[in-house]
Image 1 (cartoon, rainbow, N blue to C red):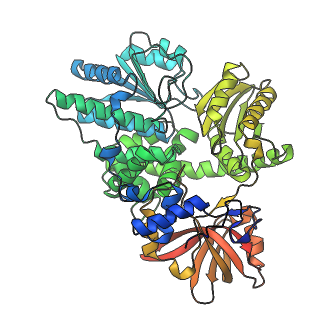
Image 2 (cartoon, one colour):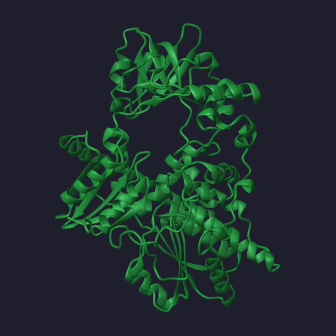
Length: 589
């Protein structure tokens, strides 16, 4: 459908000023609607797809390239990143001299995938590497002096991935070894003294590649290494086959799915569908995934399981799974991670309920939502912070204390740079240490620092406008009727994907429907059959109990509803059906 030219972005879509979840619905702005009309006419796109591309600002002449992005057209010259040449040269020298190499990685998906990328490339070159991942509880995030000193005694080169940019002391402790840092976290005014710090978020970078996760940075190093090998007449390992790891890390680290990242993920999903990496095959099998993975599966099926070892188990399990070439080892590691992930969900649930109660008692109308308590497991505070952020549409920080020592994690909302604010707290001496990136950050502090630090962080969040946010407007790409919701339309919409951070999935309103059937399923979810009197559409509302939608939808009394959400293909018993993932609803009469 096209949006009337007189409609203003401030007008509530379908007149929904306050939905059943308290949100206002907004449709396409007039300029977006005009661009969608041009895409329909000049690029011959169906209206729903045209509106999705228009929201992304894609011009008609760019539509074909956007829908079928070529990685080679988007790949930058790796050498444009500072220190890239020095890093590549030092790695090649280590290969030539047969020096021992250690990889010091973060314990999350991005760190594990980054380590596996390097391990796989070195293995293909006939060179083994030592993997070291710190224990989250005993050692904390990033390089530490004892570990770096120990590695330096037995290795000539240490490569820190997804960490190290702020680790001046630990890197200085690696006496006798050279150190390379491959990272993406915000850098300070000075860099550690080492061979190279390759990081698109250094202060002397232009920021054009700042959206890359660490695995993306590592991949660019491998591209540069292969280029130098070719220049010397030697072939390098196949890098396209490693894009599955880059895709997994990009989605799991919530990196924006734009530009090069989007191309990484699209190509990486194609690689993953070949089922050639034992670790990812085993993860899919243990999760009972019966079809090629999508970006959703990377973020919500694979990612949590790879992370589980670093959160509550052995820190290196995820990286070992991603790096192994042995299917039997992969199956065993995947089983262990699946069990740990189940345990993690139970721990998370307890901490989430307690943190939400504490945050509500403190008040949810401030610019920052935060909670802290003794004994909260440091492996789940980041997930709980994400849940608080999602529930309140505000930056959130959750901290667990062990005695006087507190370790916390924060998650931000679009347009609010949490990492820089936490880094500022560290610079002001209000916390012991902290850093991160725009959407996520970690911090360590004492009990005495808690209240002053959270007060200051609330002030910094308010200056960025976080306190002005309500429940959040629901932005919609247009309107559909049930009969238009087909598998073919969903396949066309997926051409604009993958969807995720900075690339929200298309959401449409379906007006004037009535509920024919409804029943609770799973843990607080609701299954529905909706009808406009001509056609029916299945729908599922996840966490309907938590959002408050379940009571209203089950006590509808036959009233007509406007509903909003994402249409998707539901795979069940070998059949494909269309269902609406219902996000919100409003009474139509």
